[in-house]
Image 1 (cartoon, rainbow, N blue to C red):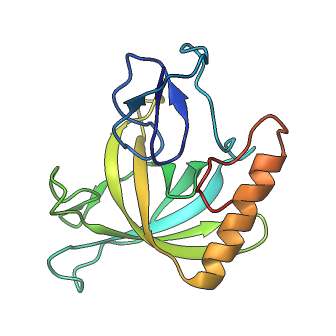
Image 2: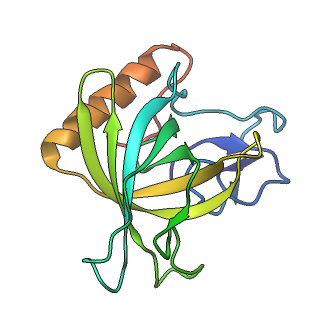
Length: 173
């Protein structure tokens, strides 16, 4: 079994990257079943509405239109979103596929208790299973303290919905 060092989720040995945050997986010595993905935080019962704007990494004045989507999965350091658009106005969610050149994503997400804002960047993207949308792994870069508190409280709430699931050690939950 392999485990994500970022979010703590478990994956089969054949996986190389986390489907939530795109982090490289490391081999785990646990006796967990490798055919079942283990979750530190369960996904929301219903996808969370979200909106994002792509900001050019080299020119913050160059911004995309507002792009709608849904957050399918959330964690302390990232989220997996679904959107119909990954490129608009000559801006792609990933400027290029190196660490040095990532376009910034300005994201607004509607949690059940409040709407919060954060900035992040896309770690990866791939076609969604429906063949019409894209699934994007977003790494959270920055969030105001008040929004972080609301977000962390929401993650705790998700974790408590299933007594056998707990937040990973060191996640701040």
